[in-house]
Length: 231
Image (tube, rainbow, N blue to C red):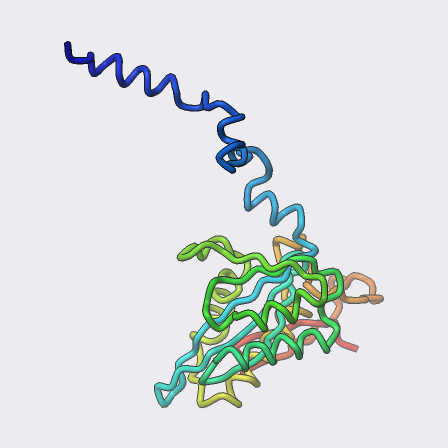
């Protein structure tokens, strides 16, 4: 007599999750993974002050050459470090930029490093940071939102700076990024930081009065404006 398909399915469903723990242990299988715990977003918010995120972005020059920019952003303070610009970003070049960052003593308080699975971030790159006690966190494949702070900065530097100018070459791009990054870190207020800057400013001047004179300082040929009280 053939078995009732409905009863067979019910029996299979009843067996799911009721495996004998002794049989699992004898087969060398551990318990099911923990489903609780913080989400990725909760982890980023809780550990923001100790997270450094790495990423690349590309810039096309006037002569249609592609330049690769390696940068890092401190998630808690939003402070950006431009680590280098090159046409050929191989693993040796990337590892050297990591060493330069460590030698510059810019890893104070960093516990986690977020990067994607690009082959340029190889073993020697990770080892530079592991020797400093930093844990390497790799984002999933094709998941740019996992490194959202770095992706957001790429969008910011493009919309506020690079989309409005023609880049002549590597040296020109380095000067532009150096100027914009200094503005971003020291003078540009951030809503995520209660309108503070990534690098706290020791401002001993009082708040401007209604008739106080304000001086404007132009950067990058007038593309960016900074304002301060006139002396």
